[in-house]
Length: 333
Image (cartoon, rainbow, N blue to C red):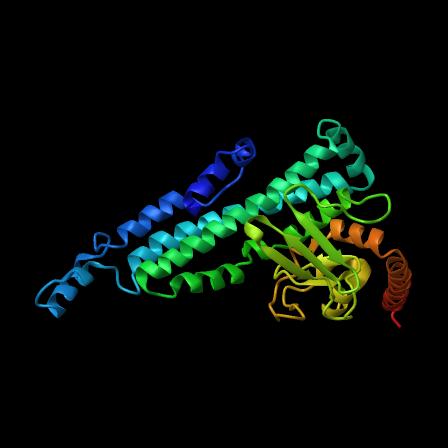
């Protein structure tokens, strides 16, 4: 069965009600654009005249789109970027809501507990699984449509578009929220003995000794996420994901941005750069990986306790130094 038919069956399957509220790739519409790309109908008249001037006898090959077709690029890639952005935004929003329902604290936890009365844990788990299916199917659709574009135009523009998506932080299967959903399902599927059972339709394996989370998605797509902090070279503790997607311990990220732990990662200067990719402005929208932190807390109890004590001591030390400086400044010393 062709992927187009599979994708349409997915859109109109059991999760159709769920998908009504989410953006998705307009796969058939983009395929129609590619069919038009096989002729010069969308090309400017000036381009056609130039082509005919170069060839005394017009051939079938002259009716094909050139390798670099500005008309096709504008129509095709602008639409695809809009759809990819909508998918990424919808996915992150729904994943964030699930995270809040599951690991909220304080007054927020009390208010959400009232809401949870109308949404049981099985429903939350089902939604998490559907979100993973949702992001996977749309990623496959984008990948296939870009491959088709390059085939029609004999170009690498589709491959270059993938790099642009990465630069815009909308690379779907590398979203930190996908890691959060994997941890979310693992937390739900933990047995009393501490082991994990496979979730329906997905299998997740977390190997603490190697600090790797493995997610097996639809169409046998297997993803591995390294959970090692690039600064302390240990398993991330109290993890945050920067906008660029890289994971760090909160204390390590604060140290790299030259801010104190109690100030919080999001207070970092806009000029602060990611310690790995050196991209600036990635701290403002950092994501606190609460589900991953909960997973580590349950899986690596001794390690988590040691890091908790160490971070608390460092936070007290920094707070003391900060207020000592403020006191000296206030009295003019």
